[in-house]
Length: 116
Image 1: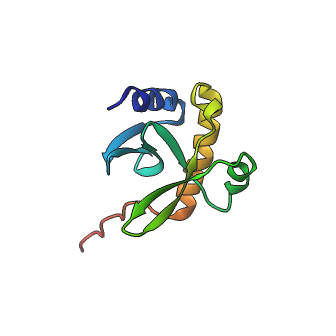
Image 2: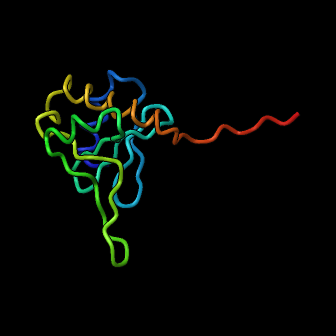
């Protein structure tokens, strides 16, 4: 893992069991089994939905985008405020908001059905 990802995981420890997992050339950041952030090219992006979008838009924080064939794809993750990266308390507040957005999105790993 990169020093940046290690720094984030350590700074986010007050939220609970935060971990990073490699994915697509970057990292997914999880609290338990819920991915609420991603890191690409040493930039932190946080999950955004209708419940927290206004805070990101107010600061003009752009979404994570990537090129796929001949188009640009935009995900529901926006750049974290730069000043929050080195302020653990602020980072945890933004991350908590992103975690809540991830919970609202319902994109969790499915629970295996029990056999009878």
